[in-house]
Amino acid sequence: MGILNLLNDFHNEENGLQWRGTFEQYLDMIKQNPSIAQTAHARIYNMIMSSGVEEVNGSKKYKFFSDTMFGLDDAIERLVEDYFHSSARRLDVRKRVLLLMGPVSGGKSTIVHLLKRGMEQYTRTDDGAVYAIEGCPMHEDPLHLIPDRLRPHFEEEYGIKIEGNLCPMCRFRLREEWRGEIRNVPVKRVLFSEDDRVGIGTFSPSDPKSQDISELTGSIDFSTIAEYGSESDPRAYRFDGELNKANRGLMEFQEMLKCDEKFLWNLLSLTQEGNFKAGRFALISADELVVAHTNETEYKSFINNKKNEALHSRIIVMPIPYNLKVSEEVRIYEKLVAQSDLKSVHIAPHALRAAAMFSVLTRLKESKNQGLDLVTKMRLYDGEEMENFGASDLRELKNEFAEEGMSGIDPRYVINRISSALIKNEMTCINPLNVLRALKDGLDTHPSITLDEKEHFMNLIGIARREYDEIAKKEVQKAFVYSFEESAKTLLNNYLDNVEAFCHGKRLTDPITDEEVDPDEMLMRSIEEQIGISENAKKAFREEILIRLSSYARKGRRFEYDSHDRLREAIEKKLFADLKDVVKITTSTKTPDEQQLKKVNEVTARLMDEHSYCPHCSNELLKYTGSLLNR
Image 1 (cartoon, rainbow, N blue to C red):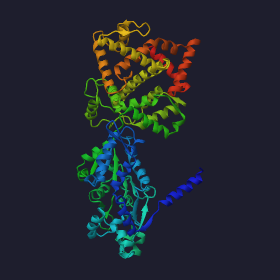
Image 2 (image 1 turned 90 degrees about the vertical axis):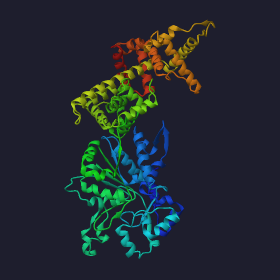
Image 3 (image 1 turned 90 degrees about the horizontal axis):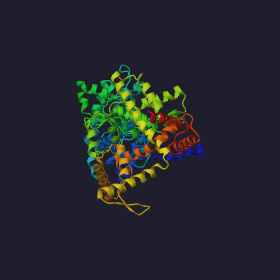
Image 4 (image 1 turned 180 degrees about the horizontal axis):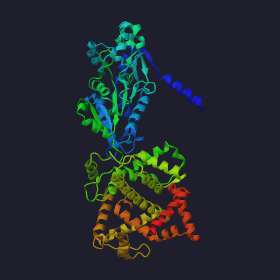
């Protein structure tokens, strides 16, 4: 379909969203569907929930955020349940400014951006439709037309609670233009748009000496004073401040705590009473969610200032830490790469993972548990099953440091370093070593890290490098093993058969001669020795495996070679040990013979077909692995 046809469809769709009628017709609509008259907080909550929620490992995952926000499921669940859900039910929490507090590039602005774009789309749906008094500069709720003394009767008949009063302009027009005939007041559907300044406002602090409070509350139109004769005439006032335009929706307060105090005092009345002062008018009603964001340093400075105590209780602080899951960090980088000019560059497998491991390690705190190093903690956080650690241990770890994730390397630094490496070296393919080297080089010019932090980060790059070394060796060795999974399963089944016979004191039947034979002690020990199981400890280890096998059978689950971490490691090491010399010789020979060259070509093809390597990075991987195996 051509662009002109699409534009025509878009125009027809927008026209189909238009509605105009009278207040009387509007009352008929809300009698049929009371949800039309929902508050701003309820509308935002319903918008989030309309995208769907799924339960993942005991946590709620909100689809509204899940395609853009990665690794922040716990923080987002707190945000939705503790703030949006509660405020949608008219609980007192809605009378607070929502302050997202966290490190730079942690996702605070992205969350607000999603809410704003989401509201624009949601008001174009039937469930999110918003209606306002036509011509009102604040997109006023038509129900404000109902006089105070009639509101109890209205609430009893319609089941809808009315909050707020007419703005000065609508009060004037009701009296002068519509002669008090409320039922004939025109009502129209409005579509939220930040560009059109309808239902969404944004305030950003600038120089306190030049910035005026009118940016929030509107200003007098001096050109009309002579015509209307008074500054208190609403026709002589521009109701065009951000608080005016954000009515019925959302107001973003960027870097709120950097604002001059005079801008913050307006929020006291707005949040607590639902109104604010502007010009020479009575308090003006406003129904809007005020969401701000700041970093931890600014927040601590704000809290320590005694002059801000009145605002402390008017703010709900929601920490938004960095992501602490390696797999989710990779998704963040993939998103940032897709938005950049790096799309044409081939990124080798595990390149982004190597960067992600480093980033996550910089954000983790050393646990007081002596048996838990940072790498193990990183793996646990990423959902890997580790021996001797269960779900309760993971919960304890997450509760050990309240501030974990509030510091460390941010995702933009990683992408900036990758970009720098690509441009500097004119690469068409970037591998994990290129990425780690670029991250290391960037620490010399990083503007905000101390010498101690730099030394710590250098050590973490070394840890990430060692983790990648293991990945690289396994990847190449698996590529050398034809049908690795099948080989692992065959070896596992042989081992389990022998372990079962050993533990039960039975003999096995030879599949070829049908003779009864003793369990193959040599086979079992060749596997167990790969992970340091001593002769004295072999019986306990085999019984442990048998118990795990029985547990899986009882639950109707299939025991695979990776169902037990230490056994998986033993089987992999056994397979790789048998093949290590072949890999070492083949990958490190400068002048391979015909047979070796054939093997290299087969492995390269397998890496390209099964793991998305390109010819360049697969060749680099083989050379690097050869050097590792020859150390």
